[in-house]
Length: 243
Length: 279
Ligand SMILES: [Fe+2]
Image 1 (tube, protein in one colour):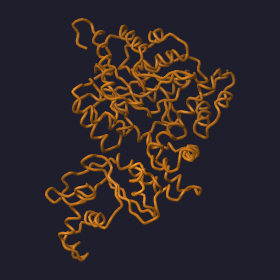
Image 2: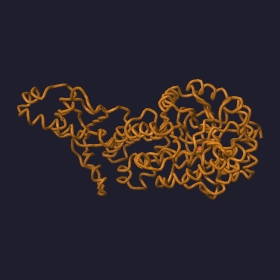
Image 3: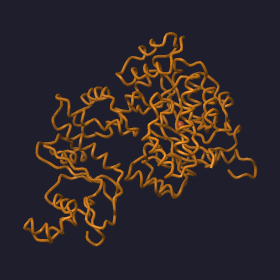
Image 4: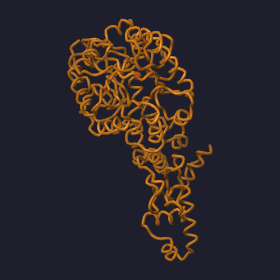
């Protein structure tokens, strides 16, 4: 056989593996005289696409269950063609663009992309590089916090999925909050209620309990209790003795 | 420290083992981590690594260095890797003789390169550049391959030997990969070992594989099979004690099952030590 240059080899492999899935016989024919067994080459095509499928399924289990196996499968085939692995050398990087991919499709339930955004945030929070200060000097938000607004009640839907009773999110305005517990290092999540929003406002804006109470027309003790409750869950972090 | 520091018998640190390993009375001699899983991450992964670093030597072993690929070495990746090697204070670090990225996209697979002069000339300076950048000895692992790539004019043993000698790096010898490749391509695995520069072996991988209709697949999803143990013993006859690492990445069993495998490896290392010497 004539010897292909390394550059020719790579560009052909890229077309085989990345550009779009192709038959292994196509690859063998690109190199006249190459005595390759197509079934052996098929292993690589299967593996490379398989990583994207496996990782995406593990990051978005609720989306997968609610879509059903057949629809999930054909969706993943399309997702693979977007070259999702991208520039992140970490394996989970290949699942990162999935919510954006879903948001651009018009043939899917509207709640799917918000639910996927929630599941992606859960992963990002779990691995978030920030160190969580256990003894901050003043009230601060948990540095791993992710918050996003949606017109679907994704937190409730995700909780149902976790209980083994998955049904699609219902419509409704929601701010989903996700943060890593300083205690367990696992991810906590909740749809923001006035209590969480108040505690976060104090932590983010550095407002005193008294000022917040006066502004909201409530008793300082109620504000203090809201902050303490959120600090116990790690949503905000309070100086020693204040939680 | 050199790339031949003797570490004993270790296991891969998997997140399934974090709590059990830290609580266990049984102890591997050392741990290997998949570099990418600990680069730039916090939470449980960083906590577990920090706890382990106080107890065991930890060696970063990468899958996405992409030493043989067409893209330039990824500067951000090298920065993260250097930081990890410093943080673990590892005596050496390793990755595979393969490519894993095309057109800027990581494929998360150890893809086989052709065996030829152009590949040697491509890989050798990249190994040197990586070693200089990271500042510690580098070990190159022999991967499994299911087909010989087009344009191959040499064979695997010759290419591996030429690369590690010309780059002056160590060899991470995956004994399971030698066995799997020998079975899949029909050659004698012991004769293959005899063609490698065994004095450069920094450590050894031991793992399980899965027979499939088209080939034996290097799955790391089962116990080390008897023929792989036999091949490891044949290697030790040639090298004396070397550091050994049990890889188990899929269908991960309880920690004790993996530690049993490490114990078996350690027993072979001890038996291979010259009388009166410490392994
Ligand atoms: Fe290996």
